[in-house]
Image (cartoon, rainbow over all chains, first blue to last red; front, side, top):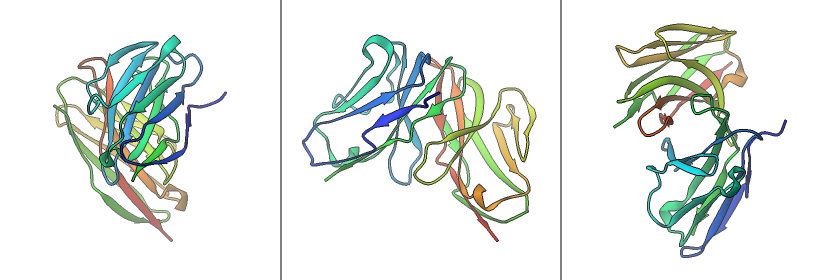
Length: 113
Length: 111
């Protein structure tokens, strides 16, 4: 069974550009989460989808970040326009139930120059 | 709000036992997880505690005291491959069961 996959693994863009990160959760997992790890700091919660609905988006830093999960399968996280402080590793995780363990993807490393 | 504290780094010797402590504060506690993360890889699940006491799984054990807001991860018979970051994470049911992570403890296992 395939795990959580994320694309791209690494993206380098200039300040002001747009980047879209994609996450494919484990098949059948209704719960999908986005997290971000900035260098040296903890993995911070961004938002939680249950199927296609946003259950909790309290961790989204500002309106430059837009997450979608149309059809309740894969999810995208778009950063527009990107700023220097957006650099970090963006992790996606999925779980079968909201109370279950998280299965993480390997992350998308974003570098904003 | 939520707050999770764990040591930044620890060093231990191959074959020894190491205990990684974690203290937390959260308003809607709904379970505590430990994850392992090797450099450049995805965090992977190690253990889960929701009731007080010790959960044992092979060389790894995790303990929880809800009244003290305290957990530890115990690693026995350390191997070189155990060198990794260990993330303490608390599930908070406020707003819908999100999992909040500590900054992680980097464990170095030396020969």
